[in-house]
Image 1 (cartoon, one colour):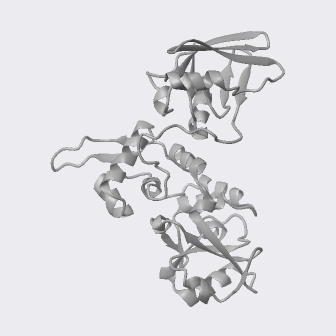
Image 2 (cartoon, rainbow, N blue to C red):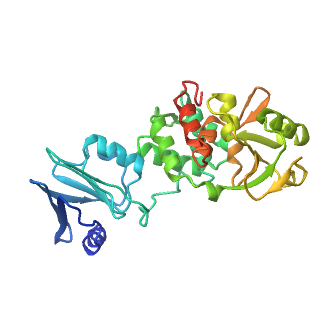
Image 3 (spheres, rainbow, N blue to C red):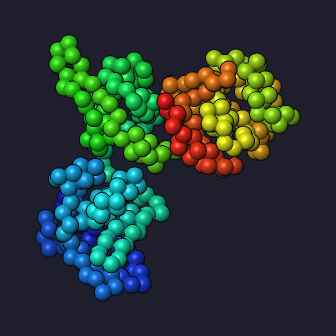
Amino acid sequence: MADLLEVVHSKELFESYPGFSVYFRILSQENAELRAQIGQDKLHLKLKPALQATRRVLKGEGIRPDELLVCPHIAEPLALDLRRAGVAHADLNGRLFLRTAGSVIDLRPVEVRYRSPKKGPDPFSPKATRIVRSLLCLRDSVTTQEKLVNRTGASRALVSQVLKQLADDDLVRQLSASAPGHPAHYQLANFDGLLNAWVSADRWPARTTVHQYSVLSNKPEEIAAKLLESVGSESLAFTQWFAAWQRRPHTVSPVVSCYVKKRAILEIVPARSVKSGGNLWLIVPEDEGVWQEGQEVNGFPLVSDVQIYLDLLQVSQRGPEAADELRKWEGFAR
């Protein structure tokens, strides 16, 4: 922790802004404080450094009103909950939230230069997101480690480690302790919190390769039907606008996009390959987990609602708008 305090002290983390000033003071290796002048209000907070920020700070062992939580990195979904609870917090990326009786300072980082050390595997790494995806698609159900192993193809060790991390963050709850012949049962505790955390960590360019094609037809269902006839329903699954339209009609699909299982499909698709502006996108995923929790709607194979939502957030042409409409729907991920 002393090293973290030294980093806080040695770096100019926050610029000067009109109307308030902030500075840190190191009293000893184990003791530091923040002092701030916000208009006529003065704050004097003791720094409480932590290498990891979890939702446990919102519970009984949380941050006192005279303390400032300082971490290398605080993810935006958790920062949102901290703001709502009025918890003073800061990270090394420039995030700072302070509140007085009459003022609020809320600075948010424009880039992430520092990250907290991981206690275990990243729950949003490609293979680990298979577990996250299944939990979100089982939002109203109880499950076990064994069932998640079978659903995702992930190892028992990875399932166990990811469940522990998500439980530590109060995103998943363990309903029963494991005993011989009686496996522990788990249930999703915070659907929105887990999905928001995944959105924050998701990196579309790193997990997909998009190949664009031009098709003469401007009718999405006609394009999709012709593609199915050419390559077969077992080789692809639709996502983004077209899939969202099948699940929850909102915006007209400007592009038909789908994941493909084999690169060989790229050579036989009945369309002309283009560098940009295509109305048919074939997406090669980096991890096969995108196929899990798939569904069939109106005769078309689709990825899960959660995957549709994530993929729509990554594109323009009213993609985020369609994503928001899908997520607000009472049938989302059910």
